[in-house]
Amino acid sequence: MNKTVAAQSWCIIGGGVVGLTLARRLAQQGHTVTLFEAAPELGGLASAWKLGDATWDRHYHVTLLSDSHWRRVLGELGLEHGMRWVETRTGCYTDGKLYSVSNSLEFLRFPPLRLADKLRLGATIVYASRVKDWRALERVPVSEWLTKLSGKRTFDKFWLPLLRSKLGDNWRVTSAAFMWATIARLYAARRSGLKKEMFGYVPGGYARILKRFRETLEAQGVKLRLATPVSRLSRHPQGGVSVELPSGDKLRFDRAVVTLAAPLAARLCPDLSEDELGRLAGVRYQGIVCVSLLTDQALGGYYVTNITDDWVPFTGVIEMTAMVDPKELGGRHLVYLPKYVPAGDPFLKTPDDQVRESFLGALEKMYPGFRRSQVRAFQVSRVSHVCAVPTLGYSDRLPGVATSIPGLFMLGSAHIVNGTLNVNESVQLAERALREVLQ
Image 1 (cartoon, helix red, strand yellow):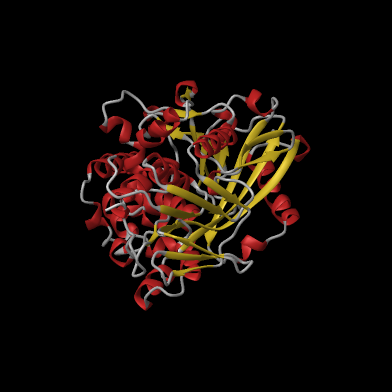
Image 2: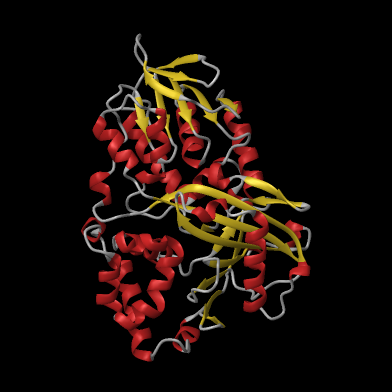
């Protein structure tokens, strides 16, 4: 990317993947960059933590062969060549039973759906993978679109439980673009000519990635201010942006980019126009309560197990060590149990002991060979604002990247309007927006 403006002082608010990518690219172009992160570590949703004797990702992540933007960054960090690629299996827990749906033959044998239902479901997925006009899908409710393509029985039996698992009651206001984006990412390999899609990870997980990211940023001269929240951003009297810290200190920068969730960004920037504040506050978010547990034994051996039974308290089972070598985790097996809820949902405040009792009790019912005595570590991560809900007409109501305050920009995951939240999309968002903010 060619330098388009003279060197300036930049401030990045938020040390997630978007903020890290922006800081790296700006520093590469000769700008002075300071990054503020309220947490004591970098990464945001991609951060790592200590789980028992092991250190691994706080939330589950996977890299696809077709994730070209993220793989390019990993290559620049010297980590892409050492990635491990694995073919994984997919399970589905429905009507109290666990089924493998890892290939076409297993899918055709899937008992909960009739043959006609399966054929329509397969046709829906193929059709969705070929749709180009995602903006038109923003005007169509996801339930209406899927029912029309797959039939009511398939929608009620298959699609609706999956929508509820990711969106809760927000599925009622979600557009068809959500499902299109989900399918499009999984089919990206086929569209790009790759023979098959593989799941990959960097040995050492995101702890290793973020350590290398930090080292390269510091080598580029980026100033990282961790455990440093920002209380307010406003127009500076001498031009540029004023950044105020809780201590009362005020710093001046030529330009600033806020990469936080939209409602949080609105609180930091009360001097934005009424329209901008309304658009930011109007973005609906899903939160997550995500349990990580280390066990002595594997569960079903599936990387992802989708759940359609509504009595199960979590919304999926992610067996990370169906992909990651258990040696990375001291020979234990790592399982994630996510439950997606709307931001502000009371479940986000449920005490750990209640979550533990509910989740482990459900696992014992789902997997007859599992006993809670096998669990060696159990930790709960709670995040109120994970991803924006792609409501009807979403992109028309989203505020722009540039704001009414000269030099102040907003660029969070809410600006992913034609994809799903993942690390590759975050990198792509940052690099695409950078061309706009540098003009």
